[in-house]
Image 1 (cartoon, rainbow over the protein chains, first blue to last red):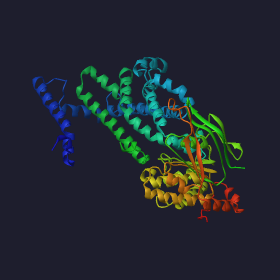
Image 2 (image 1 turned 120 degrees about the vertical axis):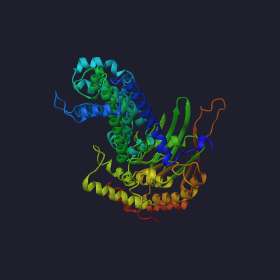
Image 3 (image 1 turned 180 degrees about the horizontal axis):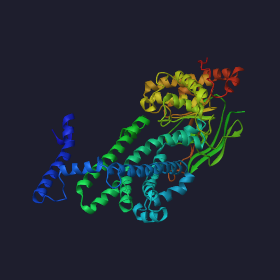
Image 4 (image 1 turned 180 degrees about the vertical axis):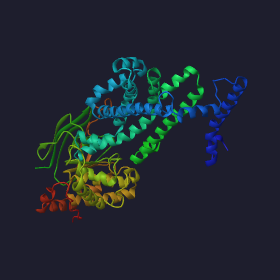
Amino acid sequence: MRFINRHPGEGGRWLLSLLPLVLLLLVYGVASSLRLAENADDKLLPSAAQMVDAVKQMAFTEDERTGEILLWSDTAASLKRLFMGIGIAAMAGLCLGIAAGSFATLGATLSPLLAVLSMVPPLAILPILFIVFGLDELSKVMLIVIGIAPVLSRDLEHRAREIPVEVLVKAQTLGANSWTVVLRVVLPQLLSRLFVALRLMLGAAWLFLISAEAISATSGLGYRIFLVRRYMSMDIILPYVAWITLLAWAMDHALKVLNRRCFPWSEGAAR
Amino acid sequence: MSFIQVRNVWQRYGDQVVLEGLNLSVAEGEFCTLVGASGCGKSTFLRLLLGQELPSKGQLLLQGKPLAAEPDASRGVVFQRYSVFPHLSVLDNVAIGLELPCAPLLGRLFGARKRAAREAAAHMLQRVGLGHSMGKYPSQLSGGMQQRLAIAQALIVRPRMLLLDEPFGALDPGIRKDMHALLLELWRETRLTVFMVTHDLSEGFRLGTRLLVFDKVRADPQAPQAYGARITYDIPLNPGRASAAEAVASLPLQPAARALPPGRSRDLRVGP
């Protein structure tokens, strides 16, 4: 049978999806034990046992200086910034996207503006944010907002334009005014698209969060990683990266499930 | 006085003339079917009637007054596709037509008024044969059922005229026949003025009380866009049906029935 016509069974699919992960762990394990055999103090590729010790230290033991459990306080600080940034960006993106996509008059002003703004590299204006909003939480939240809101609003603007004109005309023949067309026809359809767009922007949101924390913060997952880098503590960095990945994946999955629950009619919910 | 009057209407896009010198007078309660070759301006004419476009020249009058320049609740419409709201259940797709005119701020009703709207919508859905799928979403319906829904949705606001743009163009012949029967029944009951664009000549002849043929009278082979279409044939059809509709319309009860406020369920008995 040709390769193109071959489909793995249920078990085969699991096996194939786990294969790269297992291989990766295997290569790491071998490389780590080889390096450690040569030099027991090597810090570059810590063994599993060393990482478990580090996780115990970070996630289950109170820090001597602050009395906090560092992993959890870092996670709380980071997630608070992330959720605030994503929440504000989603609201702004939704409003701007609907305004630019549904009303040609507003779109004439907003579309070019958003097109230009979304091209500004957010990290390039991070210094400006630090100067304007100070080194506190606000500038980190604003970096996430400025980083993802223009892209979100442009995406939603295009989605709003994709709504067939027939649907908008139909709503008007049923007695809707401009505002109620938006409220009952455009907004519900775009909410589902917002979830899809947010899932795609999650990676960028994390990128901006970690960047801002790396440069100026006193807590947070990104702050911790860049702090312990000074001591080459790969045994802490690697579990932290795994934890961030897990958090990001969980948020992506939650958005997917929510979309399917809230908008069962949407084709975007299936993806 | 005629119900709808079209006076010397032209429609141009750039230097392309689509319609030229259209004159037409339609009485209330007529069922006009519009036929003609592709691209000869039938759908353009329907969009003019709907208010989705403005004519380049000329006037469209409804009972002597110019038609509103944007779509409104006086003109119901069913398109070939995208006629229903994909994000609303079948029941809400119809109920929204009772909610929107009454709630200019929130676009929805609450409490007893919401229940009343849903009841009226359910009644209408029973009438078009969708009583058993009120909780479904449009994507779960077949093409024919979606068009039934679109018709129910258009009729619930009680428009003064119904505009149909190839509503059955994508349906199987068998389903199409059922839809014809339903449409004629509804037309008899509501005595609406109907304009229906169709590609199917036999459909045009079977349904209408008046068949309007759109075609180009003049053609310049060097400049095919220079001349637009006119109504070349205006054929009265099904005289029995037309006069029956007139007789029903002249009954004294009828204007009162039309004057009922929206939101109250309409009496939907099958007409004579």
